[in-house]
Image 1 (cartoon, rainbow, N blue to C red):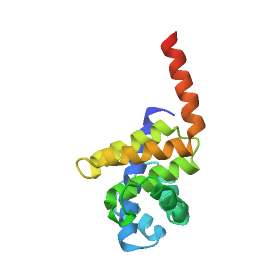
Image 2 (cartoon, rainbow, N blue to C red; image 1 turned 60 degrees about the horizontal axis):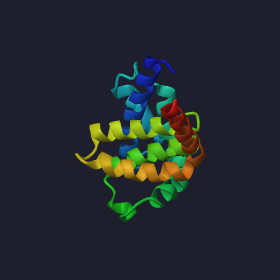
Image 3 (cartoon, rainbow, N blue to C red; image 1 turned 45 degrees about the vertical axis):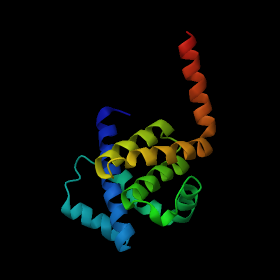
Length: 155
């Protein structure tokens, strides 16, 4: 993926975070929220197809996503910061359903977005939860990556 596409995908995640955050509070339909974003924001440098996918798929797959998140929490689900919850929902959606996105990219994007929109130290919590979940969801991918990294170090 080229730099422009990466940048557009990053912006899609940022917009999706804001849209999912809004959806968590208002329970407005994803279609209505998407329409609002298209009317109110300049989405010319956003991967709008990916934004739309995230916004519509997370509510559809919410039970599985939230059940997955809950397995790695050290606090009650309802005590999560709403921004961090939205970030976790996006990242877990990607870990579960977008195998084409490397787990390191999923985690890195989630941390960058949390640093921008979340609480000051929120990224640390998000990182811990996602590290745990990535091992459970993408264990084979992680093992293969670690093997490649070890081979490079021994060269």
